[in-house]
Length: 93
Image (tube, rainbow, N blue to C red):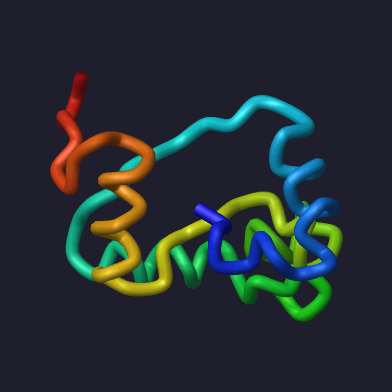
């Protein structure tokens, strides 16, 4: 997922953090799902996220920001394929 930044000097810190604990992956769908989820999360940089958003309440900074969410339909399709093996993962198990 982070191959586009693997050559950058801060990558080892990101890699260490991202592998420091368990991960729960969710695939959410619905009208304006990307927009609505990103509103709930707040800005990527938790220091700029207002209280009442997930990142504003629980995040620490731009890297330790609690959650990742796709930023576009194209990104979502790629991430669904990467993490779930399909653009259309099974709904309801």
